[in-house]
Image (cartoon, rainbow, N blue to C red):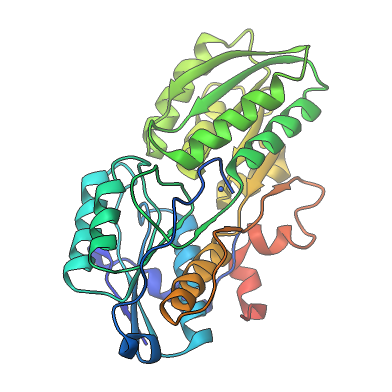
Length: 346
C-alpha cells in the first residue's frame, strides 16, 4: 500500500508500477544511530515510511522511488510516503517537507539532503521525536544522528570520471570541470575525486574548476556555453557532475559547434546522453543505481524499527558506461530502466 504525495500531480506512479531499475560511500560517515521506532506496536505492525528526495524533476529520483516501493512490497505492511521539493535548489522546501512528516509522526524517514549543513537541525528534530532517519544519496554533516548512509561512493565515481577523461584524451590535453552547487555533498565528492584523478596526469591541465552550473538544465547550458566560448581554442574535454548539468552541457556543446570535438564525460544518464554515446558526443557516463539506493534505504530503516542490525554505510555501486559496453550487463539495466523493468524483481 502506498500514498503518493507529489507536487503538481507528477506522473511518477506509472514508473513505480513498472518497478523500474536504473542506473554517491563518501567521505562523510554516519555520526551514530538514531534512537529507533516509537513503540513495540510500530515494530510489529503497519509502518509509514517517508522517502524524501532532493527534488522530483529528474529521472534519478523516479528510480529511487521505484526502489522504495519495491522494498515496501518485499517486507510487507509498509506504506511509502513520497514527497520532496520540485527542484533541488529548494532547500527551504525540503526542510518543510521533513518537518511535516515529523509532525505527522511517521515511523521512519529516508532523506536525501540537498544541503549537507542546512538539513542537520531538522534531522535532529526527528531524533528528538524518536523517529529513525536513513540518509541516502548525499551526506549530512555532523550534528544529528542517523541509522545508515546509503549511497554511491561519489568520490570514487569522480575518480572514475577523471580516469575515463584521461583515457579518451590519450592522457594529454586541457579540461574544464563544471561544478553543481555549493553544499551538495555528493557532487562535491565527485568534483574532488575527478580533480585528484587528473592531478596524477602530468600532461593534463584543468583550465577551469571553480564555476557552478546551478540546478537546472537551462542554467547549466548558459554556464557551459560561456566557458566553452571562453576556452574554445584550448579545451579538449569537459566534465559535468549530475543529470541536469550534463543535459545542459551537451546542448551547449551542440550550440557552440564543439560537440564531438571536445570530449564530454557525464554523470547520470538521460535519453539524450545515452544517444550521445552512440553518436560520439558523449565519451562516457558515470552510473549509479538509484533503484537499489531507494530499496536499501527503506530496508535499512524498517530493519532498525523492527530491532534488527543495520550497516552504518551501504554502498550501492558506481559504473562507467561507454559506447562499447552499453548493451552489456549491468550497463543495459542502469542506462535503460524502461526496457529492464519487465525483468526486474526484488
